[in-house]
Length: 316
Ligand SMILES: C[S@@+](CC[C@H](N)C(=O)[O-])C[C@H]1O[C@@H](n2cnc3c(N)ncnc32)[C@H](O)[C@@H]1O
Image 1 (cartoon, rainbow, N blue to C red):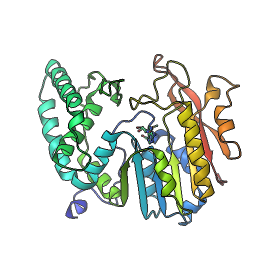
Image 2: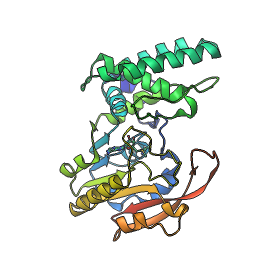
Image 3: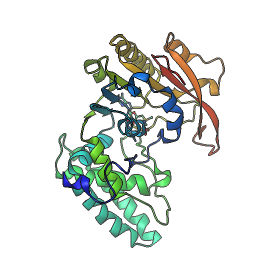
């Protein structure tokens, strides 16, 4: 595709996450890199799977560092799957829609921007039922709206209420970035060898083999009662889901795949909480340092531990 040989795109500039997603792992990449399996560095791993893709920061890191033949990206959130599919297949059309929105929005004063945001949010929520299951023109507008709302809402969140409506309020930014054209083109380039699927992580059972590396980044187990970290979808992700995931982890381990999983460490709050230590007994469990909000009420950031679980040994 000519598009990929343009201006400052292609190999020289790295594709990076284009959407702000709760639980994004960009800050943890330097630590994660120490724990990637050796088979990845040796070129033995051919397939990279990320079943909770969200902002997909680990995907961008891995596919641009190592020789990956196929990647498989999955999420149960339909809107995020729709965006990646549109970027993979119709990036130019998406850029066109985003440019129109950006132009309209940036010329408005603050009060008008706020009205524009809420008007778009209302339409966005009303239209969600009419979206089909395969790529078509309506997807391109929809993807541009999700990206726009994500970049102009308060704190750059993607959060749905119980009715499945996007309910994050307006964010006051003087000059919101909204999108970066060169990056979107680069993202499209690295997505060319990816299969992008909407569904549940158990689909992996049919797909994984011994040349596969899987990174799991499930919604965090809330580290306090009030924590809203797993409100990506209206369904949520409770302890039964964490148990179901651990069962999948064990099945994929039997298939010889290399597996890495991260989660919040319940011991940050309660030293006696062995939930994950019990669930992943027999695997390597590291506690690494992370900086993130302890809970949604106190905006305080502090050093807390994050769990990193692997089914392989590593040389740090
Ligand atoms: C912690 S986020 C992933 C963040 C991502 N790694 C990043 O760096 O931005 C968890 C993701 O899991 C998705 N999810 C929740 N339940 C799921 C399920 N049962 N199967 C697949 N994905 C699921 C959510 O929609 C959300 O995007």
